[in-house]
Amino acid sequence: MISEDERDDARLIWEFHRMGHEPKPCSVAVGLGSHDLGVAEVTADFYLRGLAPFIVFTGATSRTTVDRMPRGEAEHYKERAVELGVPASRILVEPSARNTGENLNFTRQLLGNAGVRVTSLLLVSKPYEERRAYATAMQVWPGVEIVSASVAISYDEYARSIGDERLVIDMLVGALQRLLVYPERGFLIHQDVPEAVCAAYERLVAAGYTTRLLH
Image 1 (cartoon, helix red, strand yellow):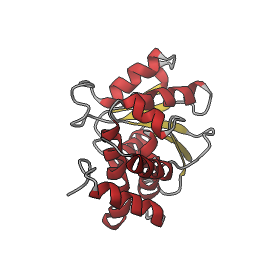
Image 2: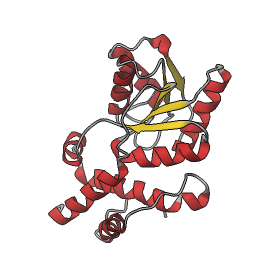
Image 3: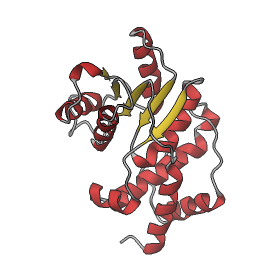
Image 4: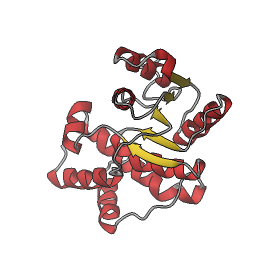
């Protein structure tokens, strides 16, 4: 049973993970592969609103997507975007990346090979991955403006939509751990984490929300 204190801590971390960037026109919209088809839907919406001339979907499979997305995350994202009205000709697929760094590096290579000049990225991820996606992009793709975005949804709405609140909290905790330890590994830029957010993280780890932690 999830306590209200634990839920409050999760909400605090959730809000920290959100960057608060206002979506705006960019060179390309990049949808980062995951278990959440909502990323494809938001990316498609940005395209249909004229915020990017085309889309890159990037992602292979992971242990959480291999069964539900057997053709690869990027391919399933493309199929969903086409269902929503995006022309298939306006979507590029990067099918090999297995982490956020690879998502961005492989996308950069794909666009370079296609002769596309990129000055800005509309980077679309799950809501609790906005900050890590931004920090990774700033590390591996310097000199490009990054607008980090996701579906406009609250923690409580998102947890209900996933149907497994404990898993959502595990994900929030794991994403924050990576923000704390990945800068020293060169994977993403350093970002200051407020003391209150760190304290919430420590309490949730102590309460057993650890399935997505690095060991």
